[in-house]
Image 1 (cartoon, rainbow, N blue to C red):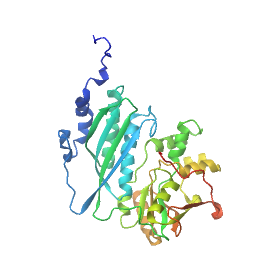
Image 2 (image 1 turned 120 degrees about the horizontal axis):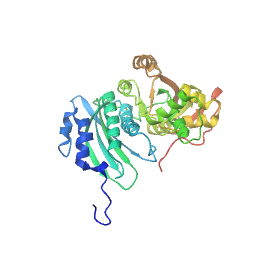
Image 3 (image 1 turned 90 degrees about the vertical axis):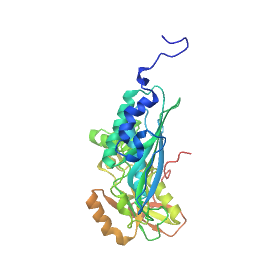
Length: 339
């Protein structure tokens, strides 16, 4: 019996902080020697002499980056994959990551078990190991953060600032699925086709970081980043850093069959696909003579690479979006901003 005013014990939290770490997170670190079995306060690992370490950190908050009732495995996958996408955009191969979980006390072991299982599946898929982290409780929403480490040949990390007028603009895969999927999840867009609906929601919940392509762009791409804020906005970021402008041909932007079916001839939905974000495709620039190598890379990896525009002289960060016949395409916004 609890003392007066003391909540009844929650059996889902019977393991406590260190029991949770032992059961759910130590197994994720078993394959990475630098984690030292999560027995110490920090990881210890070296970097090969011909490589450099690339470090990125991304956080996700329930109600902002994912729905609170999303499957824990989907949340884990999105958390890790968004960080892997940042590594790919720098031309880096995955190496290790640390994890911080801030969880309400109402989150029990079933949730943790499914979350850890999702991380384990993606660790095996993408060849990365857990190196450490922290676990705390919070009275706020679920808040998660990953710091991911990647390896890139010394001095060869892909920048945002290397684009030059005359370079062509390329994007991997397709864009728009996640932004349209979010509207489907909110009930603002109805999709009768079950397969198309599933495709859009899957791209929202489990993006595909282009880890097979990013490292292979070293030596081919002049500038690169991943599409998180929206295609138009992120091209603007690249142009801003590269000190030039760009023309984006909306008719060349690759859309999946599911997205095409939803967009149809609706200009508002096309604008959403171009600006909505959460695509986690690679957006990069390269000289025209790189096209044969990029075509070979696309064929080898099975990841489409599409030319969608060009860089040109002009005000840094300016992106001119055109439609059929080169006519200007008006967009209500360029992309997502937190503030």
